[in-house]
Length: 221
Image (cartoon, rainbow, N blue to C red; front, side, top):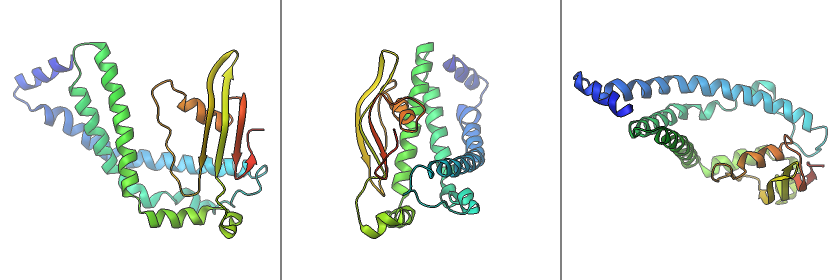
């Protein structure tokens, strides 16, 4: 179907790049900053609310920043969104133009487009970060008790985590530590349990076994 559309465009004497690719790249480049801005505003407000609720249970959580700063603290990195948009659009167009004449090919190319876009955005974002800047900002966000004592206590510690629904085991024996200043990625094939792990950590799925500790305090109890 896609090949027929491209052939038809060429028959009309038009360039498929100008008709199919350029409008999509420009459209995503201009809209991505606005979408990202409102997504970050919603995420910042949600984080502020969650920290307010969790502070009643975890004494070591840092005090929240003033509300004005919570809503605007993502702006220094907002300039990267147009570059990410170009990468995402080009990957999507490349995969779309490579679709063959079958529904299976459409699904496979769609999945590849999503996975490649996510991986490239994470890679570019990590490459653009300065180690000194991130270390300074992470140190400022750590609780005072951890900064003054010099302790290397993990922010998040998961041990032997298991999740099940009924008799079906969704996840078992998941263990990891998230240290201050680290960026941790969860990578795996579709259906391997990435979403289940994160949903269990935040309490959306029941914890069947194991422990979840935040700043050394049991968060899964």
